[in-house]
Length: 99
Image (cartoon, rainbow, N blue to C red; front, side, top):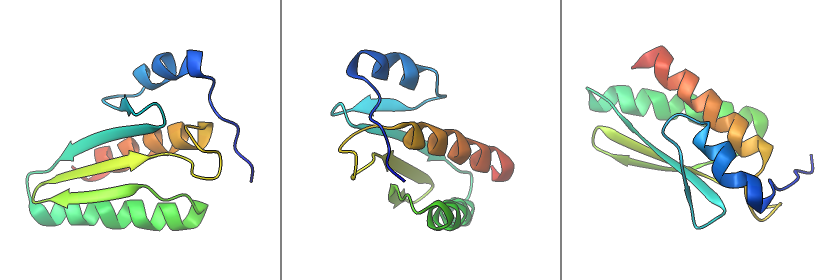
């Protein structure tokens, strides 16, 4: 599925509507999730991985003990798309369901 880029003039506004996500380098959105236990963070990453495989859109994932960082962009579109924003919302829902 071809993804259309979010126009430059809309990026900041659209990303600001997401909870805790930050725009970086004009083409990525990033968020850190903190967990009480290391294994809960790993469980979260497993849920992210399953969802990402289902939709064939994969974030950068970093696990630093009890902190998980997700970074999104759409490589084929060469920037930020609606798919990235919808994934960010879904990742937040997954976090809320297991934190």
